[in-house]
Length: 318
Length: 318
Image 1 (cartoon, each protein chain N blue to C red):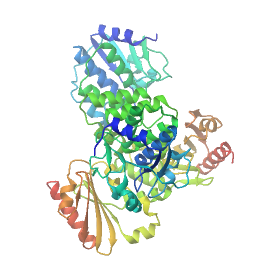
Image 2: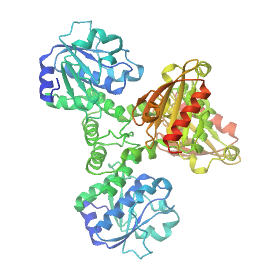
Image 3: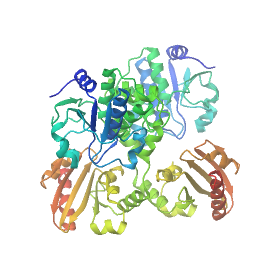
Image 4: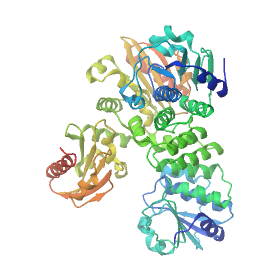
């Protein structure tokens, strides 16, 4: 059932022992929401634990400063943050999927699996929804909560770069920055600027070995199993490489071909905006968003590349 | 004389034929301010021209959409935007330095060269000061003006990443995004994400050929005349390379040694925050800010690198 802020506030007030669920492959918004809610519940003298299907990545440890790991307890309430679908609970799906009392989310794609869902699809981040919920609760924030909420909003908007950076996102960020003390510039540096040496090595290789087509408007990156082994770069460093070529002036479509097994390739397409790559991927049995889509191609690498480039060129009207 | 918003508004109301001055090596803030003020003055039925010491870079052409180049005219008023010192007028210094009627700025370092200076040193950008001035004037903004003001604020704050991204900066950006129609996500992509192929080639070379010291906490980049010739990368692509190594996890100080002439090197130091590189550069007769400084070293490249690294190590307490 979809509920409003007032109803959500009543549910939060009524619970005492809470498991807060965050999603797998965690990002700044689910982690920021999770810990912001934890610190808020503690201020309300409730017992709470943040449940993380993939654990707490080092990158987000700063959000947990002051978190006290409790002995395991049986919750009277389960609250999910930034989780549009129980599939995103990973291994914890079986335990929790059917017993989420309140889901706090901003994804229009939320499948309404929870008993009660507080959904604001116009919000830039679950943290923005939480900020409004805390206002409804009359809860006084503190530096720690503000830091968590800011991090969620900043990371989900690409530091206010993307089109979801609404007026409300800026206003909320402004209130958090202006009213509380935390080093948001350092957080932004850590979240957006810093790369591992392995990642830099990987980007160097990929950018130095792209194939360009159609007057350099199409860039193709190939990641074979052999390359992965040779570079010795950990798997998680490959996150987001599909968008890499779009930073190059003039590139309109980036195609990343990743070997799954010999003769089978997972393809990711990213568009700078002009070309609908979802339509292109649909021709190969895949799909997705207009600017970010994927498909699977069974062929040799050369053949896959040839077919994909031809399809993109056609979509470009070439 | 330092004046307030009300006084500045009176000056703007009283003038009719205005030259708007922007600074050399133009950035998004001086260009955004210049064109925002131009469009505002046109709305007030005044004659205006934007004067650009270095011309209008292709990168900022989108800000000038709708700008009408007038025949040259003798101004009754000269307004400088984002110019802390008439030195920044470049070749136009002699013509304009002593006849600036109003300077609109946010640099605490403004030397108060204008007859009247509207200075808000707490503002993130000159565009933020202009936004307040337009409010004082009771001027209704439009999409074009909003786009210019947003661009100035976004570029001067590193898209709200830096510590100067105040509550007011966010609030102003929020009002511009929420109240007017312009593609801020596209602007941000162009301003922050897109790189030329030459720049990518340059970054690849520099990141692949750094010397690392002190457990990879110090990174040294060398740019010799020979390298510049070999890479064939235009000079302007070298802007900002000094900060490049700071994106690598663990790097605390980045030292860039650039050949001026044989045996003479211009050094730029950047710090991630822990080390005061101004103090280090002062030992070599230079200086600057705590996190961004420079100096000149006369020695062979090897000797220069050795001395600089030793000085940084000492500052690190190693």
